[in-house]
Amino acid sequence: MTQGEVERQESDAVAIKWQRVRAASDELIDHAMVEAAYANPRLRMLFPNISHGSLHFSRCIKFPWTNDVPSIYPRSGGGFRVVRMNEPVGSNHQLAGDADSAEDAAALVVAHLPPCCGPAIDGTADDLNQP
Image 1 (tube, one colour):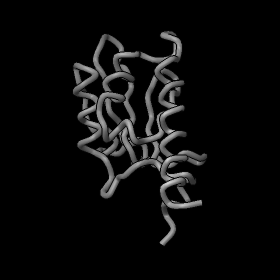
Image 2 (cartoon, helix red, strand yellow):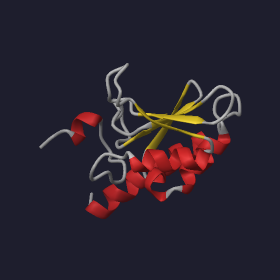
Image 3 (tube, rainbow, N blue to C red):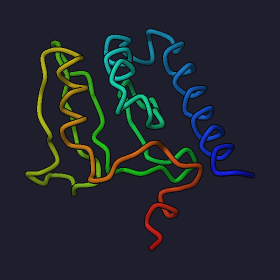
């Protein structure tokens, strides 16, 4: 398989997953949050996942996914919370910030992307950690 074919396969897997996330029930996810993230090209190239009403992003398309990209959680009472999952629970660095709009939450995620964050790869988090 050529490099171009591999990149196309990875891109297709991400696009299919975004279609599923965008089509998810309103009971599963706030669609303003999903659409704001999808509108951002840097987030649209990552592999999205929904969990308990929150939106997560991975730099790989296979489990175990990466946990170095912040996630977006809806706040009770409105707005959104952006949390870095790779920080220890209770750490001062876990909260990336709060946002009143979904667009601001997506911008916070982008502002806290890991260095050299590119499109999701066809592999696992372990594959990204290989020298």
